[in-house]
Image (cartoon, rainbow, N blue to C red; front, side, top):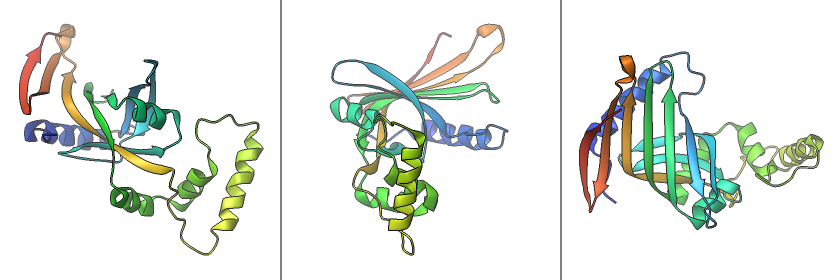
Length: 195
């Protein structure tokens, strides 16, 4: 798939940098919308863990609802909204697994307690009591004591390769600025939209 146009990539990079300079608690928080094979749509907040001209990356348990939906239907939407900037970015695209090398490199940079948590959580499954989760955390802390925590086979990442990206900027009298980049037959086009 053709890489993100440089103008859109730079604009997103600048917005994210500006958001990081605000009091926003999680400037990398984005809504991820997925749909399963049955058409049921789900949305949740995940954290952007990397981006470049190829797309936007997040990580998850591969047995989670989101990963199962992505495997059934790779079409997704992302949405960033930074209230402090009065800016929004909407992205539509196709999710594809990151390479094992990318997942491994990111895993090694995660805090150890997050690594243990990934092993302990049976993400999206029913939990009978919080004590069960705490017990599983303690079991994995013991199992990995004294050495690095390996990345589980059930944990990796996805890259959303954009086909459409829209930048929305708040303007007075609700005359918002909307600029869209769209990939059509291998080429990117850009246009403005009415608010």
